Amino acid sequence: MLAVNLPEVVAEVSAAFQRYEQALVTNDVEALDELFWRSPHTLRYGVAENLYGWEQIASFRAARSPAGLARTLQNTVITTYGRDMATANTEFRRETTTKTGRQSQTWVRMQEGWRIVSAHVSLI
Image 1 (tube, rainbow, N blue to C red):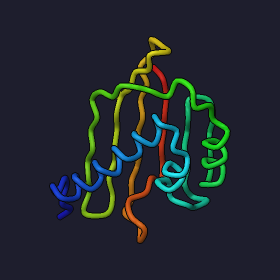
Image 2 (image 1 turned 180 degrees about the vertical axis):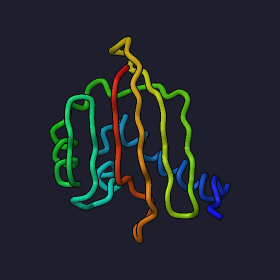
Image 3 (image 1 turned 90 degrees about the vertical axis):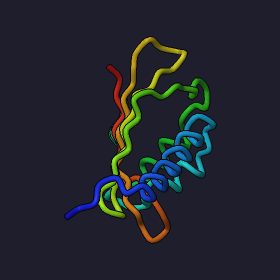
């Protein structure tokens, strides 16, 4: 039977998720690049872009404006499946818009640590 939400695994993924969030709002491109799986199989669907593979994601991050990245999270749900896979879903609000955003990530434990293998960002 698959163990869901083992406390120690939830703590690990929560820490990785918080590291990602801090890197995102401070535009720490190096950390953001590190937290995505360095693979052509990684994907990120954004508000206005579809990125296929780590290289496209890294190029997007390098070119993105660092202005207006601060945001507030709400309704964050992290669920782990066994010891090596998890999902993280959250809603967010930015001061620059009245729209609510949604973000979902699939995390997998790789040899180098927890990495995002798939992400999706959209606005309601």
